[in-house]
Image 1 (cartoon, rainbow, N blue to C red):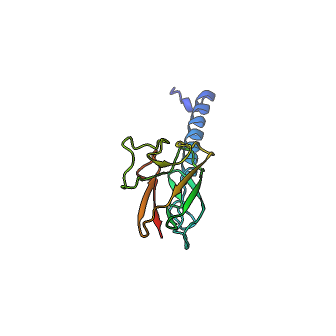
Image 2: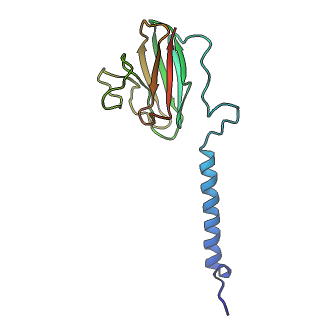
Image 3: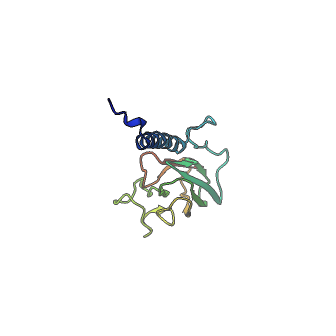
Length: 159
């Protein structure tokens, strides 16, 4: 007589637990991915039609900026109000005037870099970045999240 472990109560519970665990894993994994069902590429919006003057709200997600193309007015001071709606830690780091990031590659609030305050924004938290727009119309200035420097980037265009 051959013993079928799946017919025993403990065996049935183990098989059921494994099936439920696998289903929960797939459901969770797919619920964390922004499918872009509205026709966008994961929540990223287009360039605003008029330059931002004064303040701009920027949402940080996993791993994108909404918006990642920002237009600002030459010589203005812009305050970026940042909200981390993602799960991971994020920040916003604007390049130095020469187009580079600090040697360490991570924001420091010592004045050399223009970055969010705080420089590490946990999930559900907010930050502020105040930036004086250079007098250089037509210039495109990159920005990024130091924690996701390849996937999470954007450009500020000065008009």
